[in-house]
Length: 179
Image 1 (cartoon, rainbow, N blue to C red):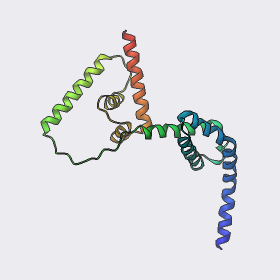
Image 2: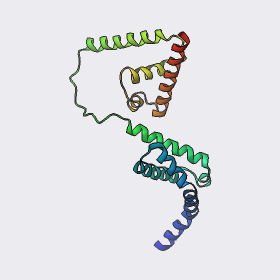
Image 3: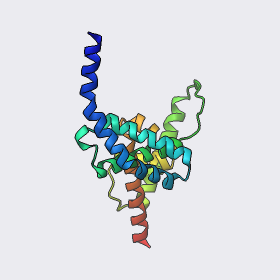
Image 4: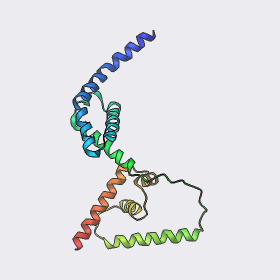
């Protein structure tokens, strides 16, 4: 009875494995080359190619395994994930902190808020939402990583990255416009 179950499960996965093997044989050299050119490190390229093919096997439906554009998009996502993982700050040991006096926290928050308002007053014609402005301020002025901001605001990391990029572009546009 166990043999019948194994044969049935093997027969059910055969078309998927065959489609995956066909895509792997057709595109592996292409994506491995992409990672080699992008990161200039053979070991990193091997690791990323392996991560890429595992994610393709897990996430992409069988009927879409041969679509090069979809595979290219997934390869770029794997590369971006690697870059974000490698650019995070070193581990910092967290310890319980002594609570500050309520007045000091309020003053610090008020000073930070006043500095933030002063900054945005210097670039008045930026087209950003208040949340995008806050994310930009937290990242560039207060030094929060995108992951920390994402956790605090319950917004995906990719959205945080997009907001920061947009805020930088808007500030640059505004400053160039004034010149």
